[in-house]
Amino acid sequence: MSANPKAGRHQKGPVAYRVDDLRKAEQQVMATLPEGALMQRAAAGLAVSCARVLRERTGKISGRRTVLLVGPGDNGGDALYAGERLARRGVAVVALLTSEKVHSAGVRALAAVGGRCVQVSPDTAVEAWTHLEAADLVVDGLLGLGGRPGLREPAAGLIDRIPDHAAVVAVDLPSGVDPDTGGTGPSHIWADVTVTFGAAKACLLMPPASAAVGDLEIIDLGLAPHLHGEPLVKRLAAGDVARLWPVPTPSADKYRRGVLGVVAGSAGYPGAAVLAVAGALRTGVGMVRYVGPKDATAAVRSAWPEIVAGNGRVQAWLLGSGVVPDAGDDQPEAIHNALESGHPCVLDAGALGLFPDELRAHTDSSGAVPDRSDKLLLTPHAGELARLLTDLGEDVHREDIEAQPYKHTHTAARLTGATVLLKGSTTLVVRPDGHARSQAEAPSWLATAGAGDVLAGIAGALLASGLSPFDAGSVAAYVHGKAAARASGGGPIVSMDVAQEVPATVGALLRH
Picture 1: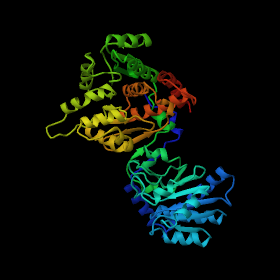
Picture 2: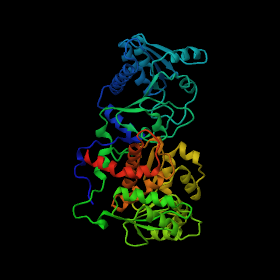
Picture 3: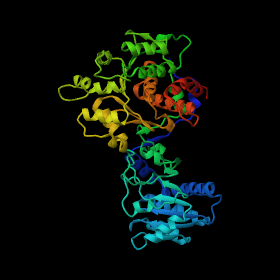
Picture 4: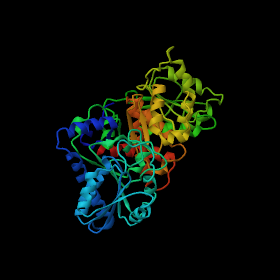
């Protein structure tokens, strides 16, 4: 197998950095510029984006109403200076100041061109609400890189008053989200457009905050030469996936293309095995060896005569889809044997419940967990991740996972020494060192029974073809989402529809 030799021209996906790395880079750039020059550069880019949004939404710029939500940090200063530029173009600009420590020079600059500034208090609340209700555009400059999940008053009350007809542009990030983890509180901005500066912040690619970003625009501030080390999170684009995709060489045979062993299904859930095998075969694995109970084997053989039943030579294993650990069959033993084989493994569904015991058997006397992130890919949904973490001694519930998915997925990766893929509308793939991929290609119609089985099959095939768990998980998530979108066409789908669209999805990917 080899990477796609024609993929070099494809566009790469966005990358995002930790707050500390971004601040260091900004300080290095500011040291080379006159005081305030970096903020003016950011404000100029923000103003251009705001003007474009106004024109697209309302047909013109001059005479439109813009409200700035201004907090105490530099994002408030960016908003004020952008407001000054908009006012010079005939926009009626009102700044609602939520703190007494706002950027004073920005306030003076806006006032000098006729913009209004209102200090928000109980006495001015009605006036502030009136301005918001009349706004064509709302610019969120409440919080920046120092923000934490959730908003306090008076900011929380203001965002509740943003009218549906107003476009919302967030400055750098939607206020009320955690910049490094993407966690959200009960109150935060939902933006139509987020204009970020220098480079993307991790929250802009991580759920649940990524759902509040809207369209992402990045204003170049010259930070790239000063950003050292690997980004915290990356989103693969078509070019990245095409470069990683294992393409058979002319001399390849079924063994060189990869043989995947599949331990999936049970008497109660034979369909999970059928779907997992479908995902693997449609991805292009050389051969599938299926291990399962009698009824599930019959179902898989009927659907896929290409499979070989029973153990044998494999390059990787897919374990657990549709497996019921206490069903009284031989599946738990088969999973144990596969984990002990040393081959790369995808652990899905039923295998996740068995994994804590396997993990304890590999933990040394000091309690150190071996790093097997180059061998193991766990693929839970939020409920399964909560159960896994609970089994490992963490007090975590599904709601906690959904509020802070990156934080808890990273914890699971650290505690297990595995790469962890958290399924969801945005799929996270996280290594024990915290580096992550975040994929959001799937339509909402993909929330259907069996979709995770197909995803596990795709990931297993890619593992058997030689990709690392980190690459296999993120590439599988991308192709799974794109195949679902292709199958859906905007309407409902079932999971087999997704599997059937994988070959065409991959073909299109490699052609362009």
